Length: 112
Image 1 (cartoon, rainbow, N blue to C red):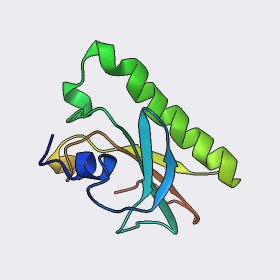
Image 2 (image 1 turned 90 degrees about the horizontal axis):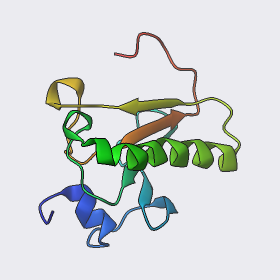
Image 3 (image 1 turned 45 degrees about the horizontal axis):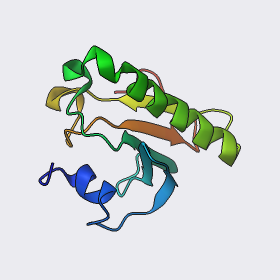
């Protein structure tokens, strides 16, 4: 989608600090971090929201979670929080499915 900020990053139209990239995923450092480490992991395929994904997308979204786990493992982070926001009321501001990987400080509960 040409108007999607994340699609523009995936297509290299916008420069970002990349943590990981492969044929299906892009992981970038958030420009407004909510923890000392805040990485956004997204599929390169455009999917608007978790609640609107199709059953055929479950494997890809599972790979998003696995990618976040591997980023944490490679960096030696033995604790972290993973967050999907779904819809504007939950805090989703960019409508391209993405997972927040947060670490580097003790996390509080409830989160928000």
